[in-house]
Image (spheres, one colour):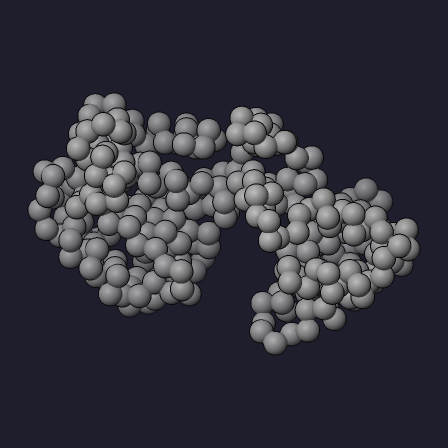
Length: 291
């Protein structure tokens, strides 16, 4: 359990013990905040046969660990959409009697990816759940969900840890704590920061900072920098946007704010296939060389 999730988790388990937990929970928040882990840990508590809720030793917990619990159904996708068949299959299983004589749980990660048909299939279960059934859903973009889905869930905001909490957790797992600027560049998520640091195929924020230094000193050209970073164009465009908004905050420079707006616009354009990413980055990096 990520430490910044502990208080919310404890609250939800307490509400379950008091028979006050809503059957449909929607965990909302940014990417890499731990919504998936929270839903999985809560599911484990709801299915656990021990009073300690998540004992790791009862039959239910052992089945979850083995990935074979008959009353836990997780829906995920590595595609752009969650189809109706996956949702209907999970619903058909929880409509049956619990095989372990306890609760039944469906977890749907990134629920905003459900097709309209899948959303409508889920809606009836949200409206009329079978006894002892819980639906735990996570989303990065709640605005993409049908209003009818939103209105029938209890919406819970999962917040990012503050800077001190982030540094404490990273140091506890052997990762050197970042600067505030570096953490902000990773969406203020220590999980994102850790994942990037451990990925040998991605360029890190330190390399980006070095690129900026070279551009400012004239030891790098915008064209070479653009070619170097084109494989991670969206990420570096967001980092450039952060750089310019910080410059604007410090100096109230209208040109810096204009460059920030240009980065936002470019980030949106980069979502479209077929664009020349190097050309876009060349223009953005060119503003650094003009300093």
